[in-house]
Length: 289
Ligand SMILES: [Zn+2]
Ligand SMILES: [Zn+2]
Image (cartoon, rainbow, N blue to C red; front, side):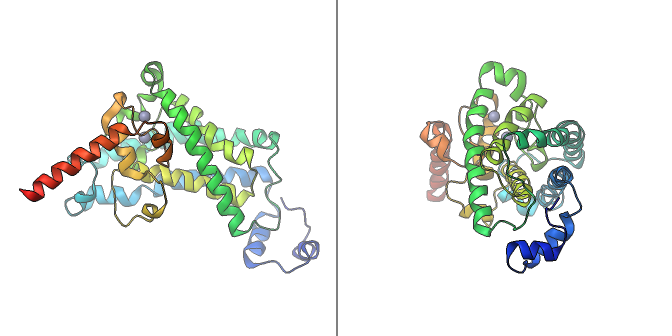
């Protein structure tokens, strides 16, 4: 809900003409409550869970023979019924019963920790959005790293994290496939960024979309050399996290969800680096032979 009664009042208060995105934001949000705007995150989450995995699903179903050189575990091919079962479970049990209610009840909590009034004009600048998102990704990555490590203790794995590791060869739909307790635990670093560094509602929407899209890419099971994420420094990506899943419950390597530096600093990428060296040696031998 905006604090200005009309477009003209907003322009008068800001001392300038509104930009086109600001006019669009005004006409869309002026009559809606902050709570309703915040709950748009539920819709975005549903769309991300449903649509972002689709390109890799189509490749898996229809173009597997041509594209399996990009598949990280090419011997495992999922059928339509397996993929649909995972999607159905994620939407019914993880989205409708957990993630959507969590978003619905978290708004008072975010307001309680002093989130800045999030729907006003002016809209944030491009650099404000980028720098806030970067901070959120860093907080998410660091928090997720340590919580994920805790989930790999004997008790944590046997009681909670085993479910996420049912997919030894991950697929995009399985990114949020986890025990309800894990979804609640890992929501902490996701909410922590916006709670610590308050942002505009538009930035919060972007954060929801980008964080989940990143998790889906990381679980896609494919490593495409043309992926734009290849240009992000210290970015882990699908190959990095796929290794963690392929090792399974015993895995003590590659805990980080986004970047690689935490595993490097805390020495939890040794297994992965050794594995890479072995694969490289095998490839070199093959070429020489
Ligand atoms: Zn794990
Ligand atoms: Zn995973």
